[in-house]
Amino acid sequence: MTDTNKKEAGKETRISLKGLLSHEWIVKNISFFLFLAALGVVYIYNGHYAEKTIRDIGRTSKELKEMQYEYKTLRSEVMFRSKQSELAKAVAPFGLKELTAPPVMITDSIK
Image (cartoon, rainbow, N blue to C red; front, side, top):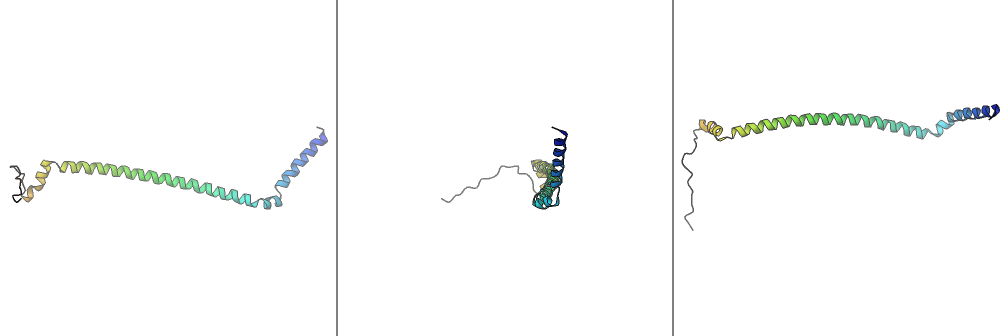
């Protein structure tokens, strides 16, 4: 390439860059720029939504663990209170006592 050809190639590059940034080109491609802006907004919204969802999952997981602990505590308390000795202590103030004799079976005498 000669110096003249290099200068002409450089001019074409500069001209084409100026042509790309011209007012007409921007107006012609405004719909594409609006699409890119909308895509950016959706991208930002998706990031915020994902963070919010992660926080909700963490909070729900913490609540679930607390409820599991409460369930285990209540279950052990019920198991303890349903023991025969504990039931006898609980009903003693009402005057109820454990049976010492075996239960009597009632049979139907009419056939």
